[in-house]
Length: 94
Figure (cartoon, one colour):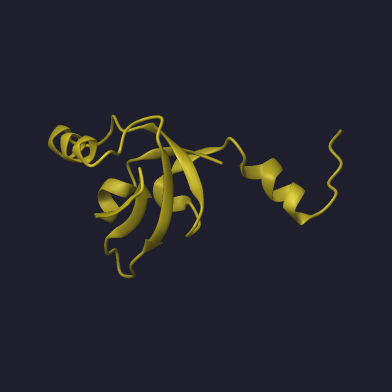
């Protein structure tokens, strides 16, 4: 049996440890990168050069409208990537 004390507890129960794609995070939310294997090898190499590695903490800053790029923060630096690539990065919600 699960007893829900308040809305914050409900939110943590539903999302903590949940795996999703990066673009499903709310702006300002953080997660741990769990899988980059579905991204093209050349893009993967570029992301690795920028510090986007599995096991790293990532903060989803924002996504621009009309399918524009996404802004994220990894290893203390902000980078912009295409929404197409961001939708292939699996993260575990914190």
